[in-house]
Image (cartoon, rainbow, N blue to C red; front, top):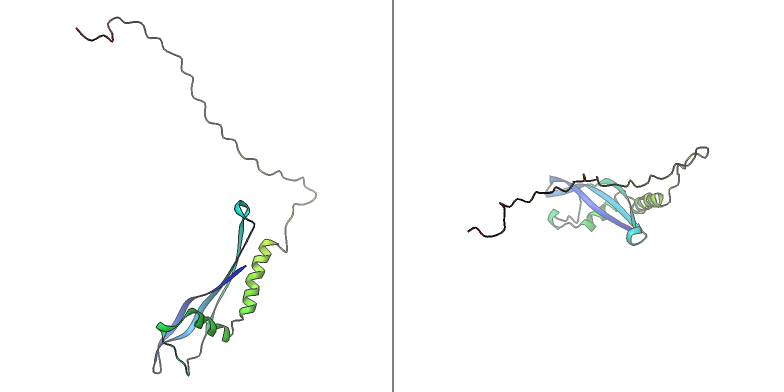
Length: 147
């Protein structure tokens, strides 16, 4: 299974005291995927969670906006209430529930089974039969060069 965290958007205050472009909110997303089978039998399942985290204005160690990294902002999210382990467990469970559904709806046992639909056979339309036409021998028409 692959889990990927991304920051989708940052909200900033243009000025906060003597600081500029101060991040106050980060919108995050946690995506997960898993592929089962191989070749033509491969199937990919996915899950996602998203949310936002808000931050108090910095009191020290301010990083200018143009020097921020996604990893740094994700760290802020995790230290400000985003439970990384719980979110990843939720995404993993979404995928597991697709692979092995915890609840299914089988056909009712008292009804006869419905056969799967059969592929429709496409028959090309028949072309009309054309009777050969005989052309009478016309001696005025010849392949010989004109005199």
